[in-house]
Length: 112
Length: 113
Image (tube, rainbow over all chains, first blue to last red; front, side, top):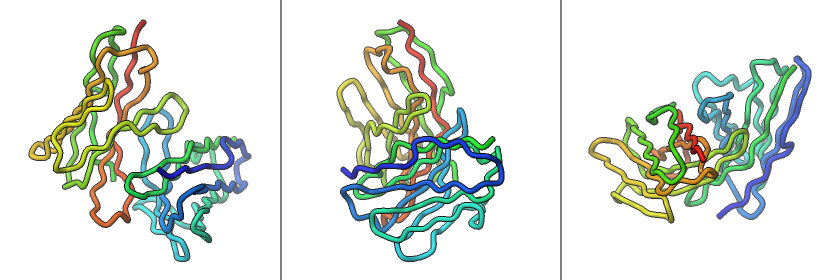
């Protein structure tokens, strides 16, 4: 299976700042990566599909100008939360897909 | 979109007992997967069952799938305190491999020692 890492593991930032989260596929070349968000005590919700070399596709209700996704290589996708607000505090998880989906360990974002 | 619905939402049992969680979904699926998540941690993949399979076993886990009822169940036998976690079903409703998974709301399982 694929090994997926995320950086950072957790981050605390001030309201109004931007935060970049990295998702790396360590042993698998992923043309597609997925970004999920999980609020406390809730389930995972797919935010967007990151496509290598092209624009990401966003799920309904997810602001593409707020959650910037860049997938510049087959092993790296980044999610930038711009002008973060406390309501953006969440657990962000990425995944890659070969036969199954392989998830990263997640990044906990807290916006104060 | 969120289509999986697990029940119960939460379940507390004694160590050694069996725990059963159910999941229902709405669309046609390619496969259904079960995941475990300990509090504040990442997902652990437990088992994948394809749409043409009816039952699958892995250690103390048994998963069933009824595509006519669009439902699945996860049975954990001889539960242990370490099984305390949230359990999610997730459906893969694509055939082409380009879509993400649709997760259910999860069942929070507590095993009392």
